[in-house]
Length: 524
Image (cartoon, rainbow, N blue to C red):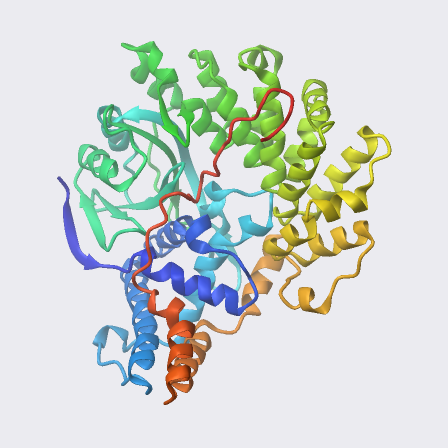
């Protein structure tokens, strides 16, 4: 078993509740622990590691945790906490903490607003400052791989991938970690754990990952992984990576059926084809089919859910489409997922397909399905998807009363939960009602691209100012009367749980539940 290093870090089970409160303080009603910020943390670790700043990354997490504990001190004692005596924090200042939090949020938030991105894209959002302090250079993606394999096979693959000085994001459909290759060893950062683990070789790394990822098949020792290997733009690794043809040849030479081995998650079978779709890797998708992949149902739904347009095109080629079992169900479910996640491009692409369009239009003839679809798309945060669905209704349902449908389905209320002002305003306009001032106060104009997202984050109150405001609020709440003490206990409840949150086992950062769509009648 790999020996853990003595370097303790802060787990996301501590950091995430603080980030949730910080987002809410800035009118962004997203739940980091629900949607999953592990990708953001894993990506930022890679950036710091590639800059030889791993220790700074770890210290920064501990510093933020310390700031959170200052809030708890103020809650318990009614006075400001004493100055820190921890020497590790002496070289840190508020600007560094604010910059760090900004980077974590930037790696996490764009895919919440930019519906062309997904979790696997986190690492590519981060950039390095050039020596001039102005020019930004993107991280270099050297290699990627998506595969379902057992521990023995992964052991050999990891050894082949071990390029000195490279940083990896490694994800399953429900979690993500990062790996940094240094001095011939794998240094593993898991946002859910409080240690950096050190693995000497691929065998040790594969064994560790069976304990890190909650959804591995313990009976078969299977791991469904997506891997992105990156380097610093000024420090290419020059590592010679194995071709995917070589990997598949060695994986399948004794057991060709391994191409269809799968992990069942939320009742759906994730095989190597589905994992390749998560990375939009057309070459590997074709290779999977060439080697005998014959279950494209989940793959098509994932392509719709994650806006993997290139993957969609390959999966819908005639020779691959014919492998889809119960196609009408899968087509309708794929449309539902595209709507629910706000993937306008994917939804538009699906409706251009004659067979899919026919199946979807058949589904929306049912009034309940129309209401369900509208409510789902309202929560997506995508005004484009709302417009596209309404347009589809108007073209295919004779005499449809859109204002009445919006009101009866409570689509406006559903849109308010997304926090996107544009979505709510659009539905109000379509329904012929006015957006109330009380509604508007809780809504934000969602950014539409990475630049606007960065501008949004830069406009937040600083993280340290947020901490100080919370400390001040905690102190001011401590009042003598019993009634006010009762109020204090209620008000402080979210803060008191900051460091003891219950792990969310039902939600995941990479996997929205793929429910089974009914025959032609649409989602239940």
